[in-house]
Length: 164
Image 1 (cartoon, rainbow, N blue to C red):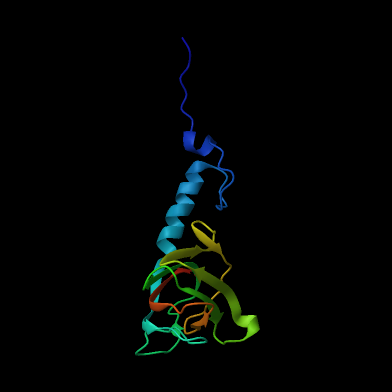
Image 2: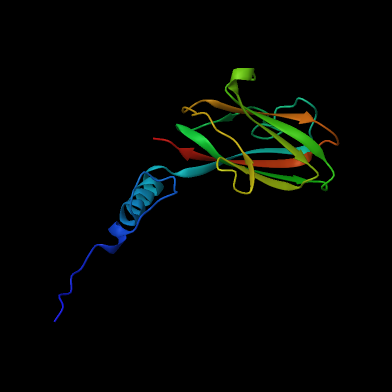
């Protein structure tokens, strides 16, 4: 009669081509669980309920037009854009950390003829970008550049991923 032996199946399955540090499935599951618990993802929003002007800051809202303040040490993981008024409007958004100067610019997003779009740090479903690390209290500044017909009634959801 043959001997039956148990082996840790998940630990023996290769786990390649991922962004995990793990080398096998079991460690990958544990790593994903720990990352999900310890590094929450959360949204901040910028809205503007009117027509945007060239060079305008898109802040908390057009009623309280100040930069977004980041609450914890984090990086931008995804940006989702919505606008009303049809898909014939063109514009560009510049994303800065703390100040509107060249070294602080980390993403320029051109949106032509669209009512919704997604940009993510992994380029899934949208434009690729690399976010700087924001410390608690840093500003996220978004400026609009008119490249055609002005965007209006805009909502921008910025999903941040905690880094510590």
